[in-house]
Length: 351
Figure 1 (cartoon, rainbow, N blue to C red):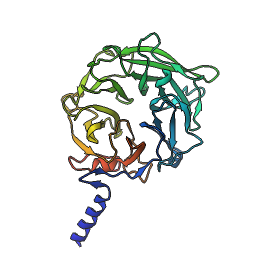
Figure 2 (figure 1 turned 90 degrees about the vertical axis):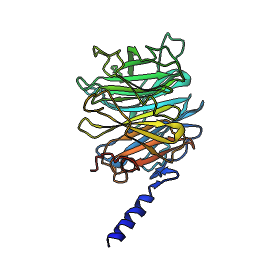
Figure 3 (figure 1 turned 90 degrees about the horizontal axis):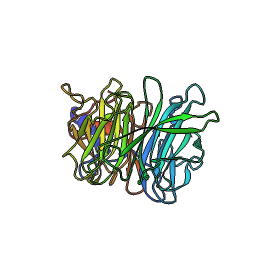
Figure 4 (figure 1 turned 120 degrees about the vertical axis):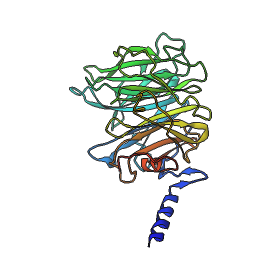
């Protein structure tokens, strides 16, 4: 009986992992028209089955696709006619005492602006778009991450671009809502060292711990305070993964275990794999994030990724991890597939 159980476990594991090609996705989205690039996840806490996955189609006549949790496009929600939509992020509870929006924010690189939509209806609430990097020679916005400050609930957008000076490569904006329900943005900070090699695209914010991480693609992942009012807001705290990538560090996401710990997940794009780092750092230094393990996946040449740290999706044990694939799709994985892949076992919300 013991042998039978072991064989059964091995067969089940083989359904999700191939030692030649990496983890197989549980679901693959319907394809976009041009070039899939970056996903985001909106979780409907009341009815998890109605949660949405958003994904950018980075073409000159691009779109912000909207999918269900099985990867089926919801055509009535997809936003078309965008000029090179690059990255997307979501946040909950903008203007809680008034309109109380959940929002999706996408960088429309071709028009050098942010587009903002209320969720789940994907209703535009930005008066046609908010110009980015006004007065700069390079205004081509690329990466986006939203930060909700725990102390007062203010929401900020952290935006990168495809070229800029070291020290002010990224700009941070405070989002507000006017009396008509239109979202506006006020520039509050310029920051961010840059190696002057390649570019900075991917940005992620850890709301709870208050840190920004961004990929200086040929140098590593840089870490800063997320609060623009922090006394050390302009000080780099860490450079992560300096020699850990086959070529470029790319998309970043945060797996939150709910106790201040978790994992930083970074795409090693040309290796079709993801590097995993401790979110909380080490016991000796909270800004030291050593590599824990690498996880190979079947998503090809993956750049953008996102993870929903939640147990509300039965199909995705431990959480839903979504990664773009160069075949114009987005791959859906369970966090437990990542956690239990070869190498050091990782903790999970399903433990």
